[in-house]
Length: 83
Length: 144
Image (cartoon, rainbow over all chains, first blue to last red; front, top):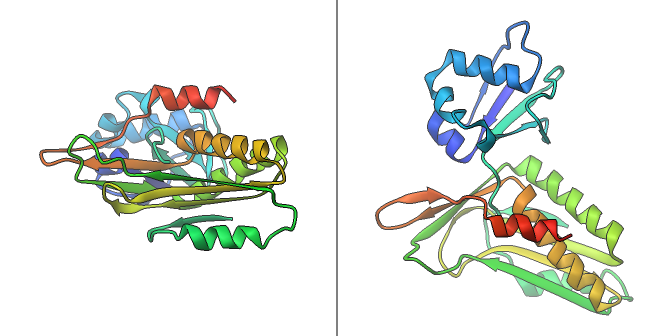
């Protein structure tokens, strides 16, 4: 699965994307975030206020309760500010 | 028509391309969002999740077409490093009657500012900051 990061999420992590193997038992976006936080200190900083981090599964914005089964690409980013 | 691009746009060319699409156009509305030259801003860098941004803009244009009788809509959004006075975004809507293209244009920019994955980073002499979502932008969208 590919993970992509944007804006200050990318800056904190020091990378814009990575391919990861998800452990068995990780079912939802929330589960994925819990696992990432347990694996890497930088994710603790990113997700210290989870309301400030949006997530998209295969280009669709989703809640943290959404299943990640069959997801090819998951992106994490702050609320948008374009225009 | 949707474009996400680094280079500037030429509004005359874009308006010309709208005008040849239909013989029924009675109103063309264009909106240009620019880098506001205030508070000692040196530059603004725009970052974009391009594939998702195109998809979100498509959804917004489709919503606008379902709600107003617009003949066509163009959205061009720039990314990369921009400077005060530079163009950021161009939205053109065209319709037979003016109220349709005026309202649809405002709808598109209000939705774009809160739903399309693009982020602004502002550079000042001593620091740089990611722009935070403005409450006023959220309220502007809510009114629709």
